[in-house]
Amino acid sequence: MSTKVYDYIVVGAGSSGCVMANRLSEDPSKKVLLLEAGGKDTNPWIHVPIGYFKTMHNPKTDWCYKTENDPGLNGRSLEWPRGKVLGGSSSLNGLLYVRGQAEDYDNWEKLGNKGWSYKEVLPYFIKSENNERGASKYHGGDGPLSVSNIRVKRKICELFIDAAEQVGIPRNDDFNGENQEGVGYFQLTITQKGTRCSTAAGFLKPVRDRDNLDVVTNALVHKVNFDGARASGVTYSVHGNKQTASCTSEVILSAGAIGSPQILMLSGVGDQNELAKHNIDVVKHHPGVGKNLQDHLQIRTIYKVNQPLTLNDELRNPLRKGMMGVEYALFRTGPLTMAASQVAIFTQSNDSLDRPDIQYHLQPLSADKPADGTHKFSAFTASVCQLRPTSTGHIELKSADPAEYPAIHPNYLATELDQKTAIDSIKHVRKIVDAPALKPLIADEHEPGVEHQTDEELLQYARNRATTIYHPTGTCKMGPSSDEMNVVDDRLRVYGLEGLRVVDCSIMPEIVSGNTNAPAIMIAEKAADMVKEDAR
Image (spheres, rainbow, N blue to C red):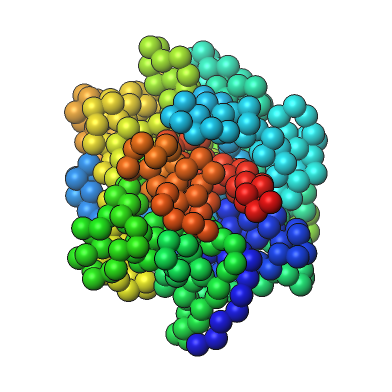
């Protein structure tokens, strides 16, 4: 068993880990090791924006997690894609750049997390960003992460925007600017050349030749090693060959909301009663590890249209389908540059609320799931999710084997508020679709279907058909030490231990009101500065 010594070891080369590796290796005197359990990002579909159709549910690029049967979903198990490749989930996500609401971060600070107000995190969003629109009060113009305007606008999308405005939702051309509320087009993590800008492409690739940065792929971390209460390194294996790496400063877990708590528990950091079930020696009793699991549950509504305005129509035509590939190859334009959604709406599910609590993702196509391809009829999808669910779940070990996936218990729709929001959000979709701009085009409500009318029928539809929108968070919660369920302090240091931080979406005390990739990058940008400050 060989051992190398580093200043910093970063576990997980995903949305946060690639940022940490870049920023910590800026100092040539610091030796950094980045470990990734997945492989290199050489699959060409990773770099084509619409390639998530090929990379999600592909075991070569996706961990292909599955939840336990969930009571709130009438006993269904959901597939939970997570990136298993350099760039992590930023290499196979829907490319949507959304930060959340200012109130999200202000609430983090109110929960006792000093330095995490919106005013204080905004500079880190700006720092990471290279926005096509240029630098401004809310955006960066020279960061590593390319953010671009949408490249394909379709008539059905314009009509959906018109319909939203007709029911009183204001037009908004920048959801990451002064105010999130409204309807408009997403911005995307796509380069000016029309390729995906994962964190591997934006943050890692430009610095791979640094002499002080080692990147190891196919490296499955078994555990963090400790010298007393101090993290001293990690044990990992590459193709079955066990190795260790030591560090003089810090081990940083950036393995995501599933991977980071799993590694902590395997290392003896977790609920002592749970660890005892698997004969794992307790290093630190931490009952909050793996708890506070939050996710956005999306309810897909699908509407058939009476004109060939959707991508379903084009994909049924072999010639037009072939021309899409030609257009992308020659010009980096066309449908292959499409993200998972084109139009967003952030709005209130009912009039009593003072800020948006639901988000729409409009797709000019329909499918049961990406890997299955589109439906054989003309249709669009208006997916809607609750932004701040109050139901929380947990993750627990099934064994002490690092290769065995943990049990994932999302606990969806467990609270009355979440159930009511699910019902109200479907009614809200119908209100938009019934507006003058769209109503003449609607041939049929394919899902949920007009037979679902009562609140109970709509709730049952959500329980039977809703699925994840791929935003697991919260399982290593940040907060004051007065609450034993908090795992890290506001500098992301694990309580009761030295030289160990968690830097990814698992630290969120509350899930943000939107997609989670941009916040994961911000968290790492801020954490990198904190690591450097604490090392002085």
